[in-house]
Image (cartoon, rainbow over all chains, first blue to last red):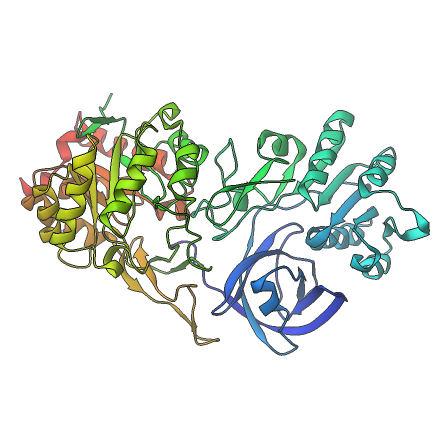
Length: 263
Length: 303
């Protein structure tokens, strides 16, 4: 076989508690991923799930995890010195190298897909405005980490600005950005994509589908009506591509392949 | 022009390649995408009466010579599947329904739920090596079970019934029993094993289920021998399946006696476009060797 798919085992170097249910796991490995790409993170005997790379340095990288179910509950038990496995990196990445000024939105666990984009953008001296979409003040994560890199962070709990993320995004979008990037709740992504097409602004979003194999074989992440696997054609797609996916903003498929509607 | 068409039962395929069940095939759109990439026919992921979530990940691991999988038959169950696949007649190649069950009534129930979806044949795997209650783990790979399940389906449908066998053992015996019970074609075969890959740093099996069926190049010579043996034992068409990755592999399997060729694991190494690639390579070989019809190479090794 040309592709050997077996996990690489890495040691947890540090666990950072970002909020009551969000942790960053720093892993001891010189990963070579591009912003937006993901890994299948393996807990031996438990399961393996997709995670974007939250940031990457020369000899270490991180994933950001929200505690949502049995798998992440097990993952949250890991401490410094414990081991886990991964395969990947898989999938497409954000195009940003030629930009001067960009707008990024990150929401929910999706924020840990665009933080790495923000890191690389700053290393390329690109001006970055970063809008965090969060329900409440205590779920704001990575604010200081972003600011330390010279990124302008905006969210509704700053300066008593209580507008919804979408309203803030619309307002910001009138500034002249070379491109927008977003990862978060899909209904919000859909609005952003539609606005980018209307305003003819370049835009890339990262979409989440049920990924099991990561290598385009099992079909669990195939999207209608194209029938292609988002683990390879995605997770990062541009606005036109996103709107060619008829289920975008409408539904996704669960682990059995059944459709589940976005509310 | 070389004629690449083949016939299996009453089905005309534009070429012998058939998407093997379990690879892609989750939705109508997914099957359609495989057909756009050159497959002569496609088989759905196996459908059970009730929804199944499948095994935990990793569901796939590969090594130098092949692939292991333990996907565990995830599917949305027969009721939702009948909506998902309601329009398979729109797909420009025959679509084959793969049905799994434990009791005979399960097979009946799935068929009845999906009988108006315009499937062109039914495939029944008696041979999955890594799902408790089904296939080899469910004791289904015996002449007795092959007879029972084939007869059950033959009683309620006129569609061709294809029985998918295990390369592990009893293949010819079970194949002959299925043919005697009315099976219209034999698929030889499923993945072999199960096998196991252990991660030596954590001492744990890599696959979520621990073990999984072995496919890909490691399986190919065994699958070729299975087809060769079966060709001498049954009269119904054989669909050869196991490790076919290139045109050369397809030609070899047809010479052993296969009419149709299942392709699955090769999607990993050569992408979903592997069907077109295999057929392009096959056509070139046929041209160079002065064959006008691909049908003329079926069973050549026996002549």
